[in-house]
Every structure is written in structure tokens, then in C-alpha cells.
Length: 293
Ligand SMILES: Cc1cc2nc3c(=O)[nH]c(=O)nc-3n(C[C@H](O)[C@H](O)[C@H](O)COP(=O)(O)OP(=O)(O)OC[C@H]3O[C@@H](n4cnc5c(N)ncnc54)[C@H](O)[C@@H]3O)c2cc1C
Image 1 (cartoon, rainbow, N blue to C red):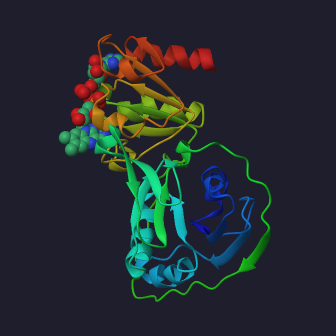
Image 2 (image 1 turned 90 degrees about the horizontal axis):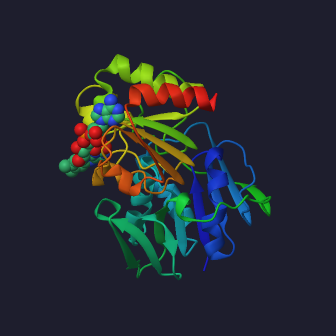
């Protein structure tokens, strides 16, 4: 059994060890940036300036992957984009969002917005996976056994015309340790930014939103958390004015601590939150801010 974990940038290296431990030893392919501790037997450093579109590097990454029995990446949209190509080119199975490893062929993954956990078996090699680091022990990675350069070729057939990042420099939702999210009662974009954004900025938190908030134009689309938005796994998730729909909870269930603020004591989110405050978010958040400061 041999595992290769593909990391898009060095920020993912610290998330590999818990999952990798299920396989004993593992190698890492780092696409951009300099090698850091990943606890890998061998780290292949591709040294790309930026991650090219998945179409351009799929073949090259797939040929490296073919030397292993298992190939994995931290779950993200870009990982699913690339890994689907790696699986397709190698004519192998792909299993997304793995949260548990039972054996070398059997894995657990969530289905139906996280309300069902499926045990699935893959019957082809290499087995291609994405995994959710929150499902595995947080292990501080030791140094790597060896570091080697590797060439990943870019066919250049697809050109990235432009990219735009949202302003504000807030942490990335999918990686953040602390997330503050708001729902429909935030009224409008300015109120959302002031109340939720302002609170988050005081503590260096990422900002999230429900689909109802996004659909009402209160929050931008890329902040949506849930079944059809981003999956988050922070140490602390504060949900302000959020009812707790199945679709929203699917995106936050791996959070270590969920704190709900809702003025309706019967809101479904209180069934799943670790801590609940029944109250008006416009009063509770400023009080909480004072207390935390
Ligand atoms: C196929 C599908 C996919 C979906 N995907 C997603 C998804 O990815 N993410 C997602 O979030 N939703 C998703 N949804 C929508 C989801 O079903 C809910 O409609 C949505 O999550 C509700 O958002 P909300 O909690 O902001 O709004 P509401 O359900 O309207 O709840 C607002 C809550 O705020 C409370 N409240 C009101 N005023 C205050 C106040 N002043 N202070 C404190 N509390 C207050 C209310 O008591 C209520 O509980 C999806 C739906 C479908 C059908």
C-alpha cells in the first residue's frame, strides 16, 4: 500500500498527517511553494509559480499518481477538479470527502447533505480520494524524510484569463479556525458587513452566510456555507440569526464548537449547537464582543 497526498500549496501540508497516519507512511506532491513539515517519507516539490487549470496538469499529475495505490488531496473545489481528472485518466475510482479509513479499500464518506454516512468500497487502483481533515486526528507533522524536485508539465491548453479575490483580507472560510456566519435577519448587505463582518474582524475570523442571506443579496455568493456552499470545520462556529436547516448544518457539522444565537428558543439549530444563546443578535453580538475583548 502506498499513498501520495497532493497539496496545492504549503498551507495544506499541516492537514495531511492525521489522514496519512491511517496509511502508515505517505509521500506528498507539493504543487506550489516551498516544502515544509508534512511528516512525509518523501516530498516531491513541483515548484509551479501558481496552480495551473486542472485540464493542463491532469495528465502529468495522473502519471505520478499511477506509481501509488492511493492518491488523495484535502477536500476543496480545486482538489475535486484535479482529482476527477487524475481518476479519469487512470480509469480508477474516486471517492470524495472521506472522513474515515476502515481498510485499504473501504472508506466512510457523508451523503445526502451529511445526514447519512456511507461505507464505500473501491475496487480499482489507484484509489483516488479527497478527504476532510476534520475527520482525522490533529497531528502535528514531523519533518519529511527527503525532499526531491519533480517536473509537472503544463500543457497550456487552457489559459486563466483573470482571477479576482474579494477584498478585505479575511481568512479563507474553508481553512479558518474561527467562523462567524449570519442569516436572513441581517436585512441588507451594509448591515451584514457591519454586524457580522465587524464582529469577525475584531477576532480575525472568517465570515460565512446562509443561502437565504445570499439569495436575498445580503451576503456575497462565495460566503455561502452548506450543502451547496462551502464546507467548514473551524474550532469555533458562531451562527447568528440562522435557523439550522439541514442544508446549512451539512456544511458545519465538522466544527468543533457550534454557538447559536437565535431569538426563537425553538429554532432547530439549538438541537445541534454545543452552546445556545436565546436572544436578539443585534444585542447579543455587541455584548459578546465586549466580553471576548
Ligand atoms: C437544494 C437546496 C440546497 C440548499 N443549500 C443551502 C446551503 O448550502 N446553505 C444554506 O445555508 N442553506 C441552503 N439551503 C436553504 C435552506 O433550506 C434554508 O432555507 C436556509 O438555510 C435558511 O437560512 P436562514 O437560517 O438564514 O433563514 P431562516 O430560515 O429564515 O431563519 C432565520 C432565523 O433567524 C432567527 N432570527 C430572526 N431575527 C433574529 C434576530 N434579530 N436575532 C436572532 N435571531 C433571529 C429566526 O428565529 C430564524 O430561526 C438549500 C435549500 C435547498 C432546497
